[in-house]
Image (cartoon, rainbow, N blue to C red):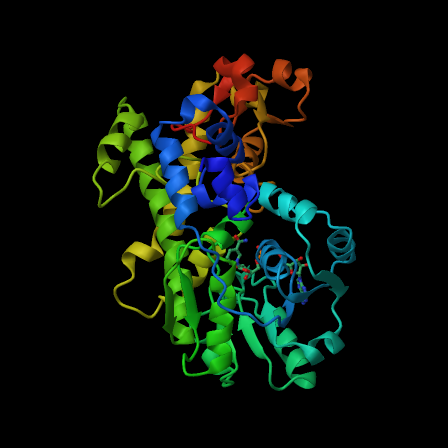
Length: 438
Ligand SMILES: NC(=O)c1ccc[n+]([C@@H]2O[C@H](COP(=O)([O-])OP(=O)(O)OC[C@H]3O[C@@H](n4cnc5c(N)ncnc54)[C@H](O)[C@@H]3O)[C@@H](O)[C@H]2O)c1
């Protein structure tokens, strides 16, 4: 049997096979169709992964699931749950609801687009209406929890109001909080049928990360049947076999905050390394490679940038710093934000040093506000802060509009992440993107 026959035998599309083999679709197609791959490691590896593949099919029941908040977290979970369950997604944004019902993706994510086009989804969008909660087995909450400086903590109002609405019509369903919470929030609600289960997806890879979760953390009591059922639902959507870990809701909340603060700290660490190297005329790339090949450190998530940004890392780091304020041993975590701010100042000075005119006579182009490749999310992107600082110093700022004029007019184009469309003006580009990866 060849790879194609094996895939068809397992009733898998090429897209699904590419998920299972953890290669991009175009690579999978090449492995399957190009005879020169037949004896290659890639072919054998794909064959062995498909051979071992067995769809998790832990829950045979079809549940009613409501998801509140159609963002990265809610929409991606909604798509995956609705291949098997009856899913209602609720949001306050009518435009999003219309898009869901027209089967249009809400954000750039090629796997979400694929699922919406090719899978039969039992998924319906609604404007928030508490009557919908009446007949649900599970309600997942994935509304925003923004950090509010004046309060020095998250704004939990949307989560709290949603819980009140649910419990006013349905006392029994299991409520699963996926929104990131302060440690102790879920246990303070004193309801054994409310649990916290952190979400670890990356924007732009939301579906992929739910198909291949690094772990499933359940902050709830394992002796509660509904809690175990929800864990099975998550396991069912996964293609890999992630470890499921049960713990208290407060521990699960801490897992989420400490994970994101670690990521923020790691970004800052490699950025400080890069600042050190630049200032001493050393090649950062050599140093980072040399450091990262130690398996305890790891050659990943080590590419310098203008600073960490996005929706989650800044706000979750701020929240953890706030929670650590009464802990005497908090020096490392409490300095992460400061390091990120000084990195942006360093980048601004470095940019100015590359200009061959005074800053107030310079035209600086901002290449894409997208903080991450494959993502259309610009929330709190570090390049925005850098651009504002340059503007305050008198620079004229132009935002990339894909035009030739943009490329011609700018004295310097700054890009947090490099893109091949910049090749023709490479000599004008300022970036700290040293490891250009897919
Ligand atoms: N984005 C991520 O990568 C990620 C990863 C893990 C955890 N989280 C956490 O999950 C939560 C949601 O994040 P997100 O990125 O999906 O947010 P998002 O901003 O992309 O989406 C939130 C959605 O909730 C809707 N909404 C706001 N208030 C509402 C209300 N009262 N009732 C119903 N809908 C409402 C908004 O219209 C929006 O569509 C946050 O707490 C975040 O910290 C996000």
